Length: 186
Image: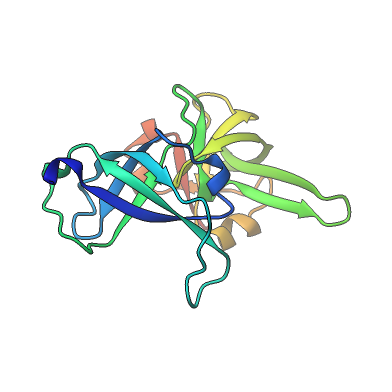
């Protein structure tokens, strides 16, 4: 029945506690990566399964597709899903790649910092974070609207020091409304 197409996705045991029936989802068929289909979580497996060749366990989640006619789906197609376990609107967020996480193994303290562009110099700022998706992390405190967060390869960001000169990449210079400054090593 085309009106009731479901997809089954596996959710890692570390994430399963956040998944609930009725949550909204966005499903991406590998054949149509730029055409997501909205869905709703309809069932959650009560027991985990261990996939051969993988570490850890996962739980099967069934998602009912709300508009399956949007794309041509066939049985057995591979897809991935984003399940919206928490949503907030109008929050300050930074690219996940920009957030430097440091763990102090002696105290178990975890700190999170970002660099912001202040007059062509990198300034390290401590941040408190909230919810995240695959791309962005909510910033609860530490940044203000309009702060230009420095992004770049992890190895470059980790080598960056407070006060280092930075240059805004040309593609970011043309789109300053993104409030992101991609680091160009000097």
